[in-house]
Image (cartoon, rainbow, N blue to C red; front, top):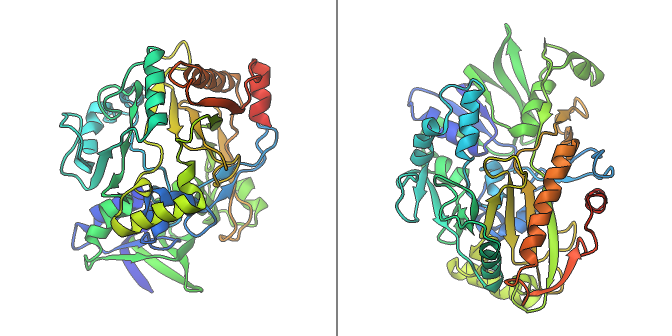
Length: 460
């Protein structure tokens, strides 16, 4: 039986950081396990390629929620990265830290040592920021971060609209105050995605005490004398048992970490018994408390041919792709949404509680394909939802996806919050700055105005 000191399950950002740091001790034998493939494919490395990476299950687990009771019973798409780098290999590459007051709130709740000024040195240590010098930013860390920029008249109209409404301009979303609108910081460098694997794993892959297995799906954690002693893993169609002399570290994300625990017999006893899993340690709460910020798309038709839609139509796609493959430049070297903002959507908020990401492109509803006409859309979400969901087993078979429900908009506070945020989008799009570009409010249409109308549209 193979043995290591540390076994890390999941090569997402956390797993890559752990593999780097633990293997820095040359006496520690470290194994990093990733169910997905390597991260070298252009669907991952091309920033605009994340649209392709999100499709299917090659790089994305592509989970679907259980019917969401407060969204008309709809099942929602839940992307989770399945490759070296995890979700940092398929995400939108927008780099924003948590708000300083969120960290300070942890301290108020008893999390000594987790205040913003406690964690700031580590943020700075992790970062190689290529923007203007700032005491808030790092310059020699492993994660390269660049400053986005408005890439056309629609981006410029968006920022002008915020200014017209008297909303603040944000010079640095990772500085002392996130409130305002401006260009995002991006994990893109020289036209390529910078994921967790690029920053932390690839530079140390040659360490003799570090092994990385891709295509390795963990079935369960092996227990011995009430401690984690190893894992059972499927690789190349064979089941292998690997021993851990010191620790098994589950870094499999918010969905699959509780799944692996429950498959290992650790979790709510009734849930385990219902799925014919032997109860090794009854532990209430495993799989509970799942939360996420909802992301609502509001779509508009442009009266001018200035959106990025043309770059995704056949001729534009061929030209843009060729340019990126030639020298990593052009529209495919961008994530496509480099501007946005944070604002207060609730009257009692003392700091930003909602976010807008502006897309100078319009996608077909429920699709990764663009509309056949020029358009733009706002992705608006709330930052502090109080609704909570869960992760449950669907089967004792580890290859079967777990059941999950976010329970979005379960509370009136969350519903009021997202309605207010959507109305802020409408304030922006109805400014003089957008007037030259706004042909029609497509989804939702202009007549969807009242609280009841907005709630019905969200559920539809």
